[in-house]
Length: 154
Image 1 (cartoon, rainbow, N blue to C red):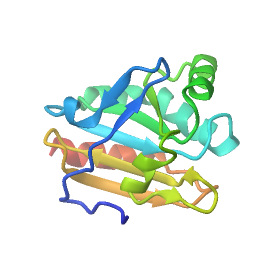
Image 2: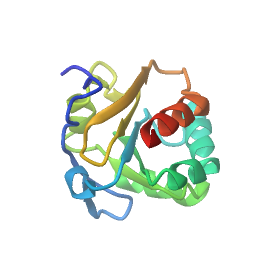
Image 3: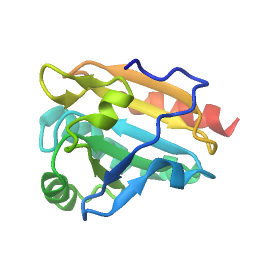
């Protein structure tokens, strides 16, 4: 699958959070959502990226945006990591069927079985308003999120 373009309706997904509770993207309509795909819990670059998002969560909250992190890790690994790092936003497991959500968003590295660093900002109607995809090892700058949040607010 290809990466959804700006203006496309985002693919729906249902994934378990760190407690196994299913989260369905279409159920969150009515408010904007930021989906942040990342390769692995407990890895260096992912750790710094998600902690930076945690430390700037007020930017998302002020814009009324629900922030969701998504990886192919199990719910158990994501829960342990989230408890350790106190992320303050939900992490969703794309473990099984392995990488189905990442594949739907065009960010699954099939060869290595992990999500690439893809971020998608969806408006209240579930339409993609901003996206960026970075390769493994290259962090996404918080400034890019801030610009996208400002553009969303108009």
